[in-house]
Length: 116
Length: 111
Image 1 (spheres, chains in turn green, purple):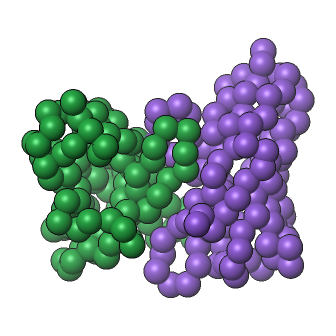
Image 2 (cartoon, helix red, strand yellow; image 1 turned 90 degrees about the vertical axis):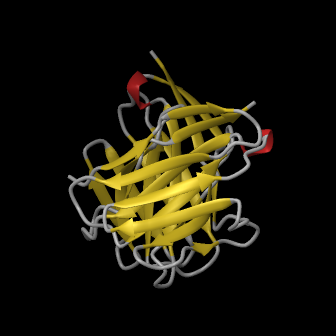
Image 3 (cartoon, helix red, strand yellow; image 1 turned 45 degrees about the horizontal axis):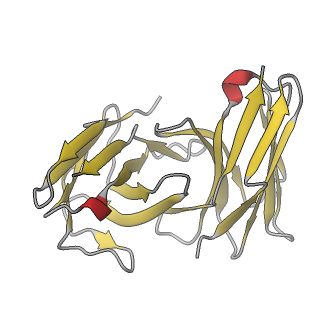
């Protein structure tokens, strides 16, 4: 089945530094990937849609200069949280469509970001 | 606001009992999906039901969809302690390919 690998699974960084999160589709090509953010005990909020070879589409209220998304290949999308602050601490999850009709979207295992 | 709303927010049952979770949404959809999330982990896809389908089964899972009421339900039969997790519905609208998630139901199955 379709597998999406997300790395790292957790990261602690100092305030003001940048953190890069990778999302890879291991056995299928994903022209589109999605990045979500999830606060504790809350639902997933879509941040942006990552399109291979073009600029990401950001949801309203998401700062594109703070959350840089790059989708340079059909199997890799990256999310960089720039100049991180404690309020950026959250669980970040990516997903991709495998294109299989009955399989919805495949999610990565998530990245727990803690900014201290 | 979120497209989907789920109830109950939390559900606690004994092992062997059935668990039913409901999801309501606001606009017309292409399909609706149910996911499970164990604490601190990513989401696992359970079932996708299309807008022209009314019911789907997968093992101990049964999903119904009522587009006239804009609602869906997820039934887990003969629950097990390992079913303890949060369950989310997600809807796909339009051609953007993105899913909008409900608030989730936290299920606790006591052994």
